Image (cartoon, rainbow over the protein chains, first blue to last red):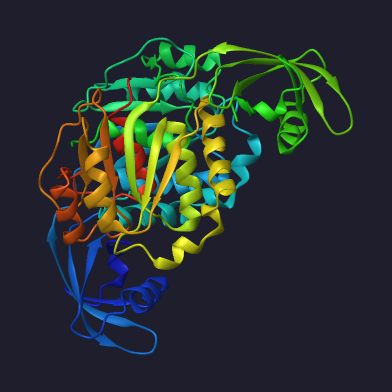
Length: 237
Length: 237
C-alpha cells in the first residue's frame, strides 16, 4: 500500500479526516506513525497529497489533509475480459487497477464455467475492495468502472460496436498467425479470453464487431501474465 | 497445463514412456484420455511433440512418444530479482519460466527480509516444481537456471560485470526520472528490486557495475506485475 484512499464520508470538515475502519490497522501496525507524522493519501476519484496525524483516540485517528497533486494519467484501454476463476479474479482486478485501466468489461464466454458467476467476489463491495487495493498499490485514486456482461452475443453485437467507436480493437488469440503492432497512444479495446481461449464462433463475432485478432507468440501465458504483458504496450515508458 | 514434460527416467525404450507419478492424476482426471488418444508432451530440455496412450495399468500409463518440434526461442533476458516473499516467489517463478527467461539470479538486498531465505520453497525440488509448472503452461521444455546470491555486494562487484559482458543492463527503479527505450533484440540484464525498491547505495553499486536505472512511470507496481510489464518489451510480438 503506497497511498491510503480517503472518501467523502471520512471528512469531518474541509481539511480534517477521521479514519476508524480497517485502514486504521494498516496505519497503526504497518506504518506505525505518531502524532505529527504524515502519510501519503489520495481522495477517491480526486487528487493526492499528504495527511498529518493530528489526534488519536482508542478507535480513530484524525488527520489534517492537503491534496493537490493530480492522479497519474489513465491507460487508454478498455478491457474485455472473460470472467476468470474466482481466486484469480481478485488478484487480476488488483493488477488491472494498478496498471491504470479505467473500464473493465467482464464477459461470459463458452469456456467460462457458469459457476464462476456465483462467486461472492463479484459483489459490488468485493469488487471495489480489490480495485481500491490496486489503486493504493499504484498511487492512483480513480476507481475503474466494471461492466458485467453475462450474455456474450448481445454484448458483442449490440454494445461493443459503440464502445469501439474511435478506438482500435485487439483480440489476444493464441491460435492465429497474425501479429500486430500496438499503437500505444491510441484509445483501444483489448479482449482477453478465458483459459483455453475464445472459441472460433466468438472470435468471428468479435471480428465482425470490428476487432482484430493477433498472436502474442508461441507461448501460452496465464491470463494474469498475459494481461500485464499486453497492457505494457500501452504504458508510456 | 498445455504440455506435459517427460524426463529421461520416464523412458522404457527409445519411444516408450511410463508415467506413474503426480502427472498421472492430471492425465486421468483432467485430460481424461483413453487408449489411442494423444497428449501434447515435451522432453525436458529437448523437443516437443505428442504421446499416444498405448497401455494402462493400475499405477501407470504407457505412451508411444514422437517429439521433433523445437521449443520456442528463449527471451534474451538475465533476470536479477530481489528475493520476493515466499508466497509470491512460487507464483513469480512460474511466470518467469512461462515468459521464457532462462537465467534467474535471486539476490539479497537491504529491503529483503532475512527470514525469506529460510523458506522451503527455495529447495532444489521446490524451485524445479515451479519452473516445470511455468514451462508446462507456456509449452516450453528448457529449464531456467537459478543462481542464488545471498550477499549483494560481492555479487554486484565480482560477478555481475562478467554477466553484463555484451549485454545491456537495466534497473527498474521507481524513483528516477530517466526513461529508457528497451531494445528488445539485444541480450540484456534486468534488475528488479524488492517491495520498497533498491536503496540508493545498491543503485549506485549496480550503476558502477554498468547498469542503467530507468523509471516505468508514476505507477508503483507489484513485483509480479512489473516483471511481466518489463519482459513484454523483449517479447517478439
